[in-house]
Structures are given as C-alpha cells and as structure tokens.
Length: 118
Ligand SMILES: *[C@@H]1O[C@H](CO)[C@@H](O)[C@H](O)[C@H]1NC(C)=O
Image 1 (cartoon, protein in one colour):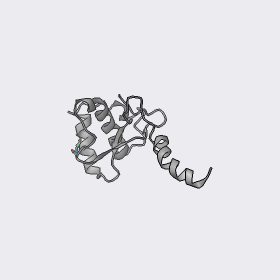
Image 2 (image 1 turned 90 degrees about the vertical axis):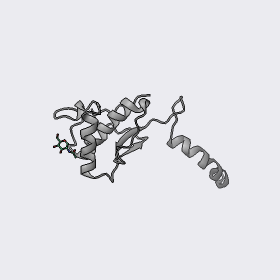
Image 3 (image 1 turned 60 degrees about the vertical axis):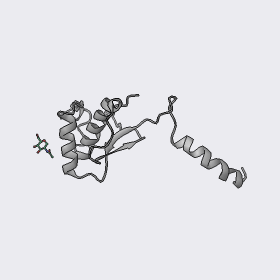
C-alpha cells in the first residue's frame, strides 16, 4: 500500500483497533489503584470501601482467588473496582481522593475476576 494512504488511514483505523467500543457506545472501564497513591492512602481507601462503603471484598481475604499478590496496591485495586462497579450508576466515581484511576484493560488474572457491570 502506498505510504501516503497509510498515513491517512492509520490515524483513522488505529483508535478503532485499540479502543473497541461496546454496542451501547460506552467503553468498558475498571477502577484500579493509581501507581502514585501512597500506602496510607490505599489503606484508608480499602478501609472505607470494604467497611462502611459496602463493597464486596471477600475475594481479597486469605485463601480467596484475589488474595495473592498480597499487596496494598492489588487489594486496593480490587476493592476500588468492586465499589465502583457496584455504585457507579448511583453517582460513584473512580476517585477515592485521587488514589484511583480508570483503565480500559481488564485487570482480571488467573482465577481472580474483576467485575464489570454495564
Ligand atoms: C485501617 O483499618 C485497620 C484495621 O481496622 C486499622 O488498624 C488502620 O489504622 C486503618 N488505616 C487507616 C489508614 O485508616
């Protein structure tokens, strides 16, 4: 293919390939811990989401599929997402005092499944 055609087509086609859209026009988004968040911020946010926040954090308990890796960042990611998916239609945002960010990449791994709700 002539180079000039590629130069025209690539910017048009690339976003379609990288960001496949759902039929309802929304991107799938998960909510995970921001790499810049401090341990204290993550711990406080886990305490809230898994406590009075009402997120289902059973899967990050010992012997459950998302317990490992047992790091604050991984556990916070799971907790943030569980909270966000549960309450996003009631106005919850993926923020947690800026300890969280959204991602279009499914964070699930092995038998640890990160929920996504439409
Ligand atoms: C989170 O909860 C634990 C256990 O209840 C508590 O020891 C800790 O101080 C709390 N951490 C923060 C940052 O709120």
